Structures are given as C-alpha cells and as structure tokens.
Length: 288
Image 1 (cartoon, rainbow, N blue to C red):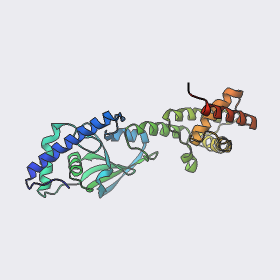
Image 2: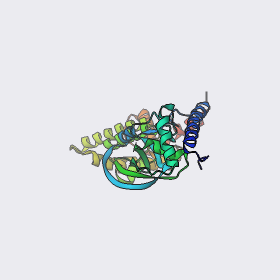
Image 3: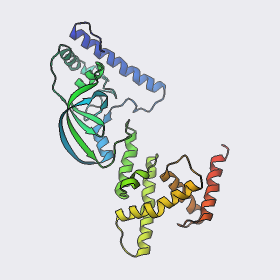
Image 4: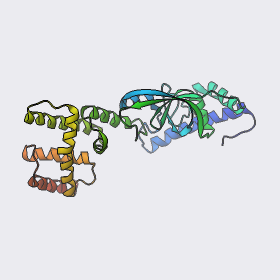
C-alpha cells in the first residue's frame, strides 16, 4: 500500500521522490549486473507494430485492465521506465498534482491504450498509469483499441526481442507457412530467418525448373515443408544429433554441411552418416 500521512500533497510528493529513486536504483543495478540496456526500457508502440505487422484494429470500449499488463507507450518513452517510474524531474508538477487529486478521492477519466496480444500501450494517461504503479494498484479503467498483427506478439519482453519478430515477419511474408507448419519453423538467431528464406526460395526455384511451370509462394512453402523440411528433420532426429537446436536450426546446419560435403542438393544415408560424424566431432572437439 502507498504510504499515507493524511496530507495528500505531501504524500504525492513523497510518492514521486520514491519512484524517481527506484528508477535510478534499477538503472544502476542493471549496469552493475551488465544487463542489456533495454531491460528497464519501456516498449515503444510504433516499433512493436512495425516488427509484428499491422493488419487492422477494433474498438473494444472501456474495460478494466491489469496495471502490470501496461508495458509500453505511444510517444512518452523517454519520460518513464519499464515500470512507469519517472526518469526525470520535469514531469514532477503534473504528476504530483494528479496524485494528490487521486488521494483526495477525485474521479479520473479512463486512460486510453492500444492492446497487442496481452500487452497494453498508453496513448493518453501516462501520469495516471505511473501513479497507479506507485500506489500498487492492480487494475485501472481504460478505453481499449485492439491492434491485430500479422504475427504473434508472444515472447516480447524487451526492446531487443523486436529484432527477431521483425525478421520472422519478413520470413513469413516470403515463405507463407500456415498452421502447424508455421509454428514448427523457428530459430533463435534473427538473421537465420533471412538465410532460411533464401534456402526455401532456392528450393522453390529448383522445383519450378523440374516442373517447367510457375509455382506460387504458398505452394512452394507448403511443398518445401512437407517434401524437404520434415524428411530432413526426421533424419536429424533419427541420427540423434544437434539435440540442442530447434528443428529449423538443425535443418540449416545440415544443408550447409551437405553442400560443403557433396556440392549437391540430394539426401541419402551416406551423406547423413557423414554429417553425423561431423556434428559429433564438432561437439566433442576440445576447445583451443
């Protein structure tokens, strides 16, 4: 609970000072622990939407939302940290005025937010959100607009996560997988999505050469997944190699090494056996 001396103006001043101190301490702790710079950074709405790709939006009206689901801002990213603690003293006057009004029991209009998945981004009401965090409130009234995106926002916790989302969105525009196939193809290095895109498009080009006809992207993606990706992944898992990698990462490693080995785009037992020996040798080779 927020501390209460019975004097709203004094309590509001104490709340602001306390939150500013916590913001400074969090930044110092992050620096001492050598954490990524974006751990305490508020998520920028425009960058999140750009990474995920916007399809549309819809008005949901006034709802009660959880305060801890508010993770970003439309245009005030420099004034607050990840937990909406003030990052400078320049917003002190307005912050304390609103905090004192709330302590006196004055009603406040709903804030305005955008919803992406389970996350909320403040359009209007940043000070009220910051005060709600300071006073340990769990919910707040909000006018919600939901943003519908091309790819799922699941997994976004900090700004650095947007890079892999952006690369995945581009990959899926080039290789339009659907359903379970879409979920099965994932990598942890964002730049491997670009390499994987090139591999699929090259496979589709060879397919068109063999058929002597044009094949659209959706068909290439579907056939590549069923005729190339799944068989290779099954061989990798049956050979009991590359266990610490995702299926797509294992696939990429296999096709890289296969081409180095035979300079061909074919698969057979001898190639898989040779690749298994290379993978085992790579994991057991002592460090230099």
